Image 1 (cartoon, rainbow, N blue to C red):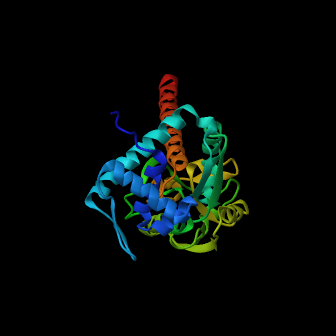
Image 2: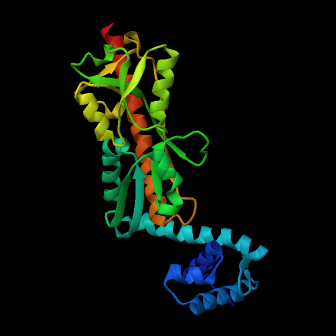
Amino acid sequence: MRQQDFDLDQLRTFMAVWETRSFTQAAARQHRTQSAISMKVKRLEEQVGERLFERNTTTVTPTSVGERFAALAQRIIEAHEDALFAFNHALATGKLTLATSETYASCLLPPILSEVSKTFPNIEMEIRCGHSWKMLESMEADGIDLVIATKYPGRQDGQPLGRERLMWVCKHDSDVHRANPLPLAVFPDGCLYRRAAIAALNANKRNWRIGYTSLNHEGLLAAVDAGSAVSIMIESAVNDRHRVLLPAEGFPELPAADIELYSRASEISPVARHVSDTIRRHFKRRQYERELQAINAIETVAAVA
């Protein structure tokens, strides 16, 4: 007799119980009654031929078979979702919460959103902007699916996307960079750009002071555009209103900003998983184009010489 195939709905129910360790919470997550959840798990156990959970009035604990089965069930669910996404991108629906800094949102996010919207035209995206370190800390509590952020020391769970040079900038026609002490426009303490800038100035024995502090990228831009301060920006944020300040003018080289993609550790949705793939492909292509431009520039200089 033909072996009965696993039912995807039963597998999803099993995973909901396995992740929450609760039939009650699994029922709430799937918008079903607790008895319906129990029945689906019972039928799956009958098919497997083993108990998948030990349960009593207060606890639900996966058996050793249940622990092994969870990995298999997750692979089957993901393979099914991958197949659907591969052939039905336009039909994919769901909600995704993506968080990033205001700087990255204004400079890096538009082409990413354009690419995602073309690939998944029917998904709903919530964009949150704020300080990267705060959003990383609150991913689980705030239900954030993905965070595009500068790599932070001590975190090993990010997926590398690319690298941005950090630049000293002031207003293009300003002489504020000659001021002593040097007035800085920076994010509040905790920002990696701020730490890197202050460390570089101290190492270079350059006098400085905090002239402006802003929670928002637009606030720093206002101080720079007023000609009142020097700030630190990623290369992609520099525009024709800005003057890039060089080591010859007393502004030491700054370390590059490594950009990484962080995913929620639990319950990552198929939409989030596939959107993260799209984001990684975008940055990989962007890096290739930058490298190609650099090679072409070198060849042009060599030809002129």
